[in-house]
Image 1 (cartoon, rainbow over the protein chains, first blue to last red):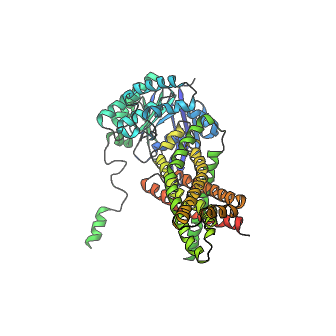
Image 2: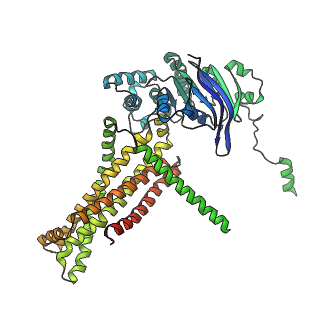
Amino acid sequence: MSDILVDIQHLTFKRGDRVIYDDMSMQFQRGKVTAIMGPSGIGKTTLLRLIGGQLKPEQGKILINGQDIPQLNRKDLYKARQKMSMLFQSGAMFSDMSVYDNVAFPIREHTRLPEEIIRLMVLMKLEAVGLRGARDLMPAELSGGMARRAALARAIALDPQLIMYDEPFAGQDPISMGVIVRLIRSLNNALGLTSVVVSHDVNEVMSIADYVYVVAEQKVIGHGTPEELRAHPSALVQQFLQGESDGPVPFHFKAASYSAELMELAK
Amino acid sequence: MIVDKLQQLGQKSIAKIQGMGRATIMLFGALVAWPTPRKSFPLLLKQLYVVGVLSLLIILVSGLFIGMVLALQGYTVLSKFGAEQMLGPLVALSLLRELGPVVTALLFAGRAGSALTAEIGLMKATEQLSGMEMMAVDPLRRIIAPRFWAGVISMPLLAMIFTAVGILGGHLVGVDWLGVDGGGYWSAMQANVDFQQDIMNGVIKSAVFALIVTWIALHKGFDAVPTSEGISQATTQTVVTSSLAVLGFDFILTAVMFGG
């Protein structure tokens, strides 16, 4: 078995005329937490959707366990998806079901296990995210952080190989952020998952990731372990990691010269 | 100037046709599958309740009032010619052939159709549909198919209930209030209503309307722009488009069934 679970080769993806990715390659190691960072609006979520087969690239391969996801037919794609999970930014809990039924949903859909076993599995997953006591609540009754944890319990319900987190830290208070950071790392180790975290929260990501890709301008601008990245020579990578307002990504939107414009007014 | 207008017209037509294409693909994806009764039946039952049973009240009340108004209006005209005994057939035929299927479809579009669009649009906006897809469960089969069948099954039944209650409403006003002979009301109706020509054609009409309204409602929700504005637009479009489609198809069906 190869060490690499997801192998993205020469990926090109366009939305209309806008190029999102241009000949981009990256690899996610089995059993590791790999992070993808980058400024907002560069299509990080799009990348997860490409890996999940919800979008098709213009060119390139997305290999998971050696299977090229964009080339799969519907049946094989659905089979491949059973081995992966995605945690959406909103949690995407089904609003008409209780937390318990939400977590039980994938198990009921894909197995014919008796209800007693399903109950055991659901309680186990909810215990892992600390929400066993909230099993009878409806998603609308959960706080943002709890909803994301409940969604995480649902995402690991069928013990996937690959779990993808879409901005798991966005909009969380420090306590729930800490909880989610800890959960991503501990679930990855305990369940032997391969995790992909898409985020722009630099500190949180650097604290849990084994390997980091920084994506900007349609391609990977830097990659390595968190330590390697901190010493990365690229000014753009450094600007992003340090959160500086001006640098290769300019503070000012493209405009004519300020002094020229002021002089124009004075005339 | 004219070229611009023509271009706009062309773009709009292309967008419309693309929309129809997407709607057809959606329905095809939802319906062409091996039936799995163990999973689908409970889902269908739930939707029959939400779409059908919960629409009962508005159908019962509207049916009753429309029957009463028909009897009242019919009586004033018929009594001028001394033809009050024809009140029964008037009420029954109007309801069976036209008002039952059409008004039920319009009410259904407003009550259940808009709710379906909003529900599915919100599911899309909150990524529930995407989430389901990533869990290897096809939202077309899990969400769209049971709602489609629930609409197609429940609307003809609702139309029958509407018609039956309307005829009772007509009886209430015509016989109990205005004094038309009760036996005459029923026997004239029996003599003048043909099962094949009137009842079955009415049922066929409402089945066609059911298909149109449910399909439009589901497609508009599934195709909605996933923002609050997009969903509100989609809901409005469902009611407007399906009402117009129902009236248009009603004319075509009437022309085919009773035209010549």
